[in-house]
Amino acid sequence: MKRTGIDYEGYAALCREADKIEAPLFDEHGVLRGLRDKNGNGVVAGLTNISKIESFKVENGQKTPCEGRLWYRGYDCIELVEGFRRKRFGFEEIAYLLLFGELPTEEQFAQFSEVLAAHRTLPTNFTRDVIMKAPSSDIMNSLTRSVLTLASYDKNCSDTSVENVLRQCIGLISVFPMLSVYGYHAYNHYTNDESMYIHRPQRKLSTAENLLMMLRPDKKYTELEARVLDIALVLHMEHGGGNNSTFTTRVVTSSGSDTYSVIAAALSSLKGPKHGGANIKVVEMMRDIEKNVSDWTDEDAVRSYLQKILNKEVFDKKGLIYGMGHAVYSLSDPRAQVFKGFVEQLATAKGREKDFALYSMIERLAPEVIAGKARIYKGVSANVDFYSGFVYSMLEIPLELYTPIFAIARIVGWSAHRIEELINMDKIIRPAYKSIMQEREYVDISERV
Image (tube, rainbow, N blue to C red; front, top):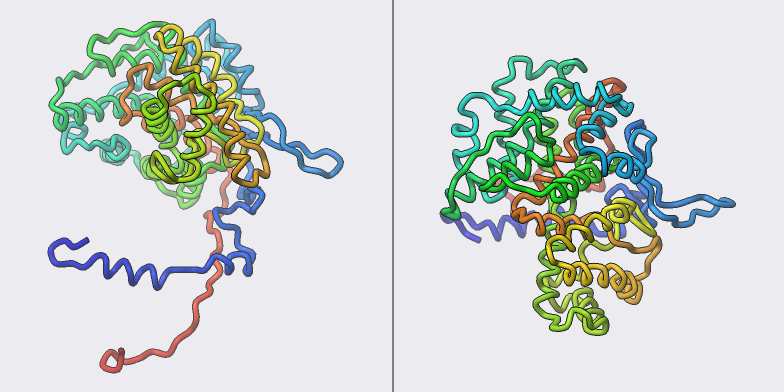
């Protein structure tokens, strides 16, 4: 690749030569690549009281895979969803739990919902001057830019007291749906030449309802649509503390940086396709399967195509069946388990039972296909991304907003972890890297070959 006469390919070749570290050296020096050992066990980097994941049980000194479980502040996430799903929207209630450590009373819930509603506002002309200027097809970049720009409007930007950080976090939790949806509308108008409309959020609506209302030209949505989206937001809100973007949150917080910079760093982590973009790949993969398998009810045909995906013969030729397996969970992802029933309801309401049946078949067949090709040390099951992309497609949410919706949920967890780190930190997080560099003698430029 050459631009303005610069040989980037040549420079890149130099980088590859200088920076290549042979894989055996990691084992030789006892370095865990990705901070996980060959069995998938992660390095313990801190303590948290915010959430917990269970994927194994230890019995008689033996570690055995078990059905996955996820707790928020000590409560099983499945029980939390069952507790609110028929009575009220859950985003605000579970956000309160993660931030403050206790489930709210009715009075506290109403008050906190009002606090979030009061913060659903942007500085004067912010939408015009920031979001609509230089719109990007990458809405995560647009969202990150907006967050960093909001720092300019905060006179107490660098104050890291818990009170001030809490104010900033609640403000960002409240406006993330606006920043994301408005960023998409700006891109869709200026790049795709579609109509431009900006709907203001309504105080009486929940986060999920406002998101759908602001996204759609006619502002209309069904209660089922809003409730399924609300559950998706709750299930994506927090995940154990050890995921890449949450660890980023804690690392940058430990340096003493401001809230806007911390959240921008977390967003930059989440946008990576190995982290927050997985559900997009699921949807793209499923479209490819639907296009190339004529009979979606033929298990042999579907299994054969999955084998071709795994063998790098079709789709993106990466050899991955997206939405299957998880870095932590073994036998099951509890988020996927609780979500699947609501996905089926929405598929029935949308007349997409055939699509749901194909998803269910692949959920069943994929682990068999993967186990037939590779050594599986902890089991393979559908993760939450397998179904979330399908839900977003049924809600007519554009692909460009899939990862931002993940961020709209996960900023609650990031905020909780930032505050926990601020309260407990006494040192900057500074991991060690072992140098394998060889010392060399300096050579004058005139004598270099």
